[in-house]
Image (cartoon, rainbow, N blue to C red; front, top):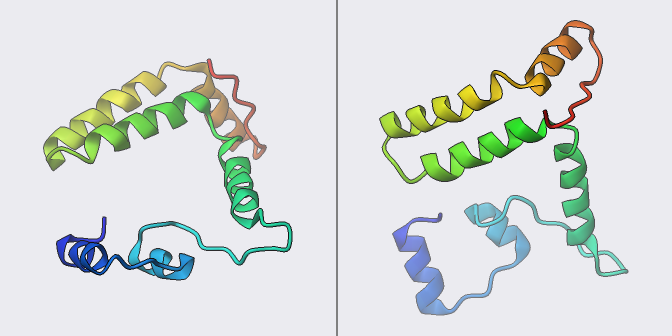
Length: 113
């Protein structure tokens, strides 16, 4: 994630990073100030989950698969994986619901179908 030279520096120095340092290096996506109840990171994770929940479950599953498999291969193969994953989304009712909701300017109601 951070490249060989930074990884070596962190490992060789046995450095412990703050959340902000980890964010700056790209090791984490978010760094939050701790709150009095000690659950600031948990609450941020819940906020992220609330952003993900309204998305189409089939499209999310296929996007995750395409990213996870595509990141480890060359560009041509990665694009083929993406195409294969998207082709599984095209015939779904959720995709049609998304298009209809967009046209009707309303939030979609995905069912995972």
